[in-house]
Structures are given as structure tokens and as C-alpha cells.
Image 1 (cartoon, helix red, strand yellow):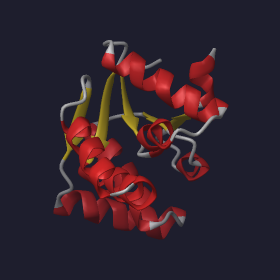
Image 2 (tube, one colour; image 1 turned 90 degrees about the vertical axis):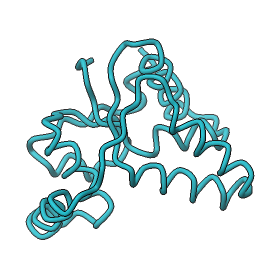
Image 3 (cartoon, rainbow, N blue to C red; image 1 turned 30 degrees about the vertical axis):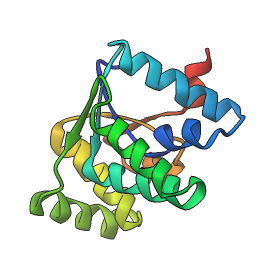
Length: 141
């Protein structure tokens, strides 16, 4: 496990939604490791939006708000601002690698911070040669 990793939104969403799978168990374990100081997690401000939006849609706005507050103070997690430089880099990634806009912003955020690994089950991150994808299930070992 690298000292720092970019943490994609699905790592936060799966445990909150109560999914019973190896992926969700791995996500919960990754969050435990981050919280305990096993690595420093970075994520885009966009992650807050994605997590709160999905939790609010599935479990209700009050739950979404609660998860949003928790994300903002999550031990070991640092938020990266989305700047015009981030969006410009995301544009290049989107055009050259065919990633969707949100994934492009996540990749650009990680790369501009100098982060070389992303914790995610989204296989699209494998299209980015500078990023090593760490699957959620890999945390079950």
C-alpha cells in the first residue's frame, strides 16, 4: 500500500449503502486503514458531491447530509480543490483517453497532486498509465 492514495467516491458509498459484497467489505477495510493512519487519502471536492448525492437519493436527504458532514472531518482524508488547472487537465484526459468528465476530474486531481495510485473499482482508471488502480477487494487480504 502506498503512503498516499487517491480515494474514489465508490470507496465511501458502498459501505454507507450497506451493500453486502467483497467490494463493500474491502471499501470498509480501506477506510479503516486510512482512518488508522495506514495511508493518507486524497480525494477531489467532487467526491463530496457524488457521495452526498447518491446517499441522499438512496437513503434520503438527512442521511446524505450526515454522510457529507462525516466526509468533511474523516480522519486521514484530505480534499483537493477543483481549479481551472484541474479542469484543463481533465479536458486533456477526457479527449485523449475517452474517460467521462467526472473520472477525468478525479484523475486530473490525483495527477496534479503527484499521486500515483487510486483506490477504486472503476476500471476506467486503468486507462491512465500514470495511475495504478488498487481494487477494493484487494483490501480483504
